[in-house]
Amino acid sequence: MDFNVKKIVKDAGAAISRVVQLTEEKLGTSEKTELDAHFENLWERADTTKSWTEKLLRNTEAVLIPNPGNRIEDFVYQKIEKKRPSRLSNLEYLGLDMIEAGNVFGPGTTYGNALIKVGLCEQKLGQTERDFIGSAAISYTQPLTKFLEGEMKTISKEKSILENKRLDLDACKNRVRKARSLLGTQVKDGLSPEAVLDQAERDLRVAQSEFDRQAEITKLLLEGVSSSHAAHLRCLQEFVETQARFYAQCSSAMTELQQELSSIAKPGPVLRINSEDMEPPVPNNTRAPSPSSFTSVSIMAPVDDSNFSVM
Image (cartoon, rainbow, N blue to C red; front, side):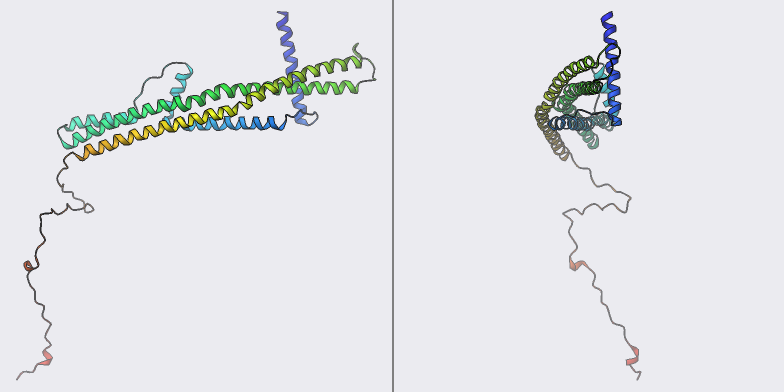
């Protein structure tokens, strides 16, 4: 119990010291230990990677699952670690309605038969789409999610620890400077300025060692982002291959459907009362009338009576 109380008091003191140090830095009354340029570049690249990966993940999920309600439902089921209920795609719902309508109109009719064929194809496309969504999740979105929730969270956590170690280090540096400024003054609280300086320098060495160690740990994690980029490139290539396969399957299904529909007998001409509709084409066996069938019409010029005289 004593150990826990002491630890709580120590942690509280460290937290207060960090707040004071941060406030003084904001006010410009205290110096701040800067990290080297290489470390800053690594951190900027990691932060950029995190931001763009989050955006790419959101946009990819929006393409795969356009309905935002379904995306939220999937997210909830994922968090509670339960299997989400199976749902039909919009194409499959459309296919079901077309098949039902075709049966109502009659499978033996041209239109009913066509509706059933198209409905079956729409169902096939819907199943192909669902397979594509599952494959794309495994090859692309899941690895990106794992990266954000694993590596990036670890990097952010270690970076936060490093920032605390940096604040502790700068606070120790300030105490050393204050202790040195007190050298030669009168003893207060039973401790000589030399003893205070000696203790402050020991604390500074410990803080510097902890800061350097944490900086090295964080740096190694940041350098690992390059490996993550290589892994994400492989995932992107797999996603493109999955997408190409999906569109090829859709194209094949639609080509087959077009061939099936072209084999269905076309209905005869239908009279439409619409002046904008085209008239049915003239059958090929209808011959145009020959010139001899036309009635000859003689056109006579008008006679001018003024040129004649009556005898």
